Image (cartoon, rainbow, N blue to C red):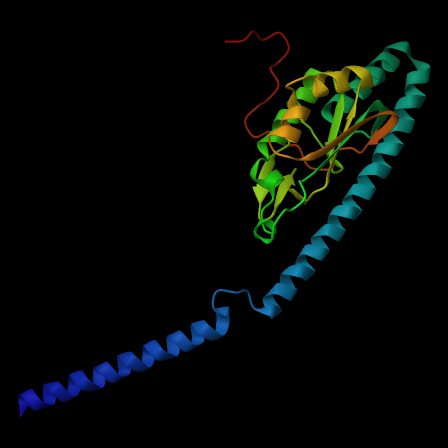
Length: 246
């Protein structure tokens, strides 16, 4: 009798466990839809992203307005004092070097496109994406050739710029970019073009090794937009004046 009661108890517990598991499975299936983000949540994320982009644009507009006011103040004070005038001039140079100012001048414009697809199996293959290190090489070559400002698809290249893969594109400064790629570089146009198009150089490598379609053209006037990201230092700090390195 005791044995029969124990068997009934085990059977009831098994039924309860099975019921609980079935409820959990149905709940999971209904909530994540096979691992996909529900449409309602996706819409919510889109709205949040749109709101954040709007806040960023508003903050950037306010920053530009404040910088314009500051520039007027600096100009007024510089006109009154030669020492302040020299300081303001140096400050402008540092701002241009750090990439936080729009700049213009002569230089080159390079456009890079992937090679034409030769068969249907290449539809999902992006040669530029899988060889993104060539962008780093190109940027380094531009710097070596004396480029004073560089941008890729309107993303300003600064000291903290990151170039990384993201899905089917390349992220630059955390922003998604896609081909065709337009690289602008301000500097001596003749020197820059000669450095890039030298035999066995970066342009020839892109064309012959990767079959990319690459065009380079000299321009008398190029405008490169400022870097709009936030530069922060967590570890580095200025060395106090007069303190020697240890």
